[in-house]
Image (tube, rainbow over all chains, first blue to last red; front, side, top):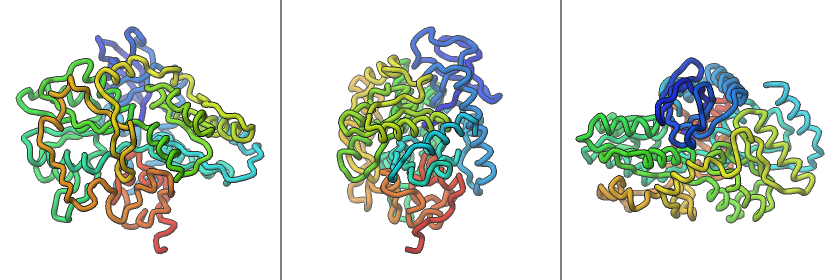
Length: 96
Length: 368
């Protein structure tokens, strides 16, 4: 549950934002960030549905690349009950 | 692996390390990135990377999981918990329900969630029914729970809070003198929320090099390089190898939300024992949302091995960095992700589960 996932903010509505990563969209709370910290187009790190920090586009991209590598590894080596890969996790459960 | 990571590896290989160096990490995300990127095999063999207490699911008190199971079985409530809590086994006789997953199969209303937001939505959708949120996790998970409480929490949403702080566990490890490590890679997202300053004690009190790292091989290798240089040059400081995200003071509004909703108290860690000032407890003004106050305690002190890791399981040693996952006798034979014995094989952040997923399938000491 401790994994942070970088997401891009698409639209802000009060304290809630529609965020996207790897083609998956999630509702994310901005309540942990100081007001007016982020705008649409910015990147944030999301933990259990809450943005914990604003990050740069480059930082988001390098993290996504790493996660893609992990997904590939998991796919190759998984047992019948594979560890849930991060991208899959996002797809199944929202921004954890 | 990018060229940058290769360059860091070259720089590390150039360092004149005369002896074995043990570098501990205390974050499941770090362990996952280290293992999946194959950093152990890429680094010189005298550099050891040790997974320490970095898995909140693994150290969540056994009695709290038991309490959650009993609440779900015996009270007319909906229990929600983060998904990887559902398969964590408690110590009960064979015929009894030993996990939230089994309680769910037995008819209890238990639902996995991925965010506190889902707990709020569920409580709002069924205002006549009590929803209990079993909230285990480190600072990065507990801070969002605090944000949820500060923003607004429905009257029918209660918390069974098992939040823990990471740095007191490292402090306890160092004070105990039981586990020797030469350097620390400090957790990136805990520091993002709480501020890197929390880890100054490692350098100042224990004179151990430390560096905050992010979750890419580049950031981890930079942190490893920094601590090795510190060792070689006799300098000690807390380096920040994740500066784009980890800022001085951390996330001030998140810390204010934690301080406004929770107290820091002495707390039990599964298989480890009580660690001073290492747990979060709800402030008295949230008493109406405290499941421990609303419902009678289902604690049963007569249970065999209450509070401990499962019988035969060496998760306690894995969590404390005393042994590697594949130095546990049951790793890969009695204990696999399909039939996990200990929580380190259950959770995505458990060192055993991570090593298994990366291809380590057998114990080094299976028939010792």
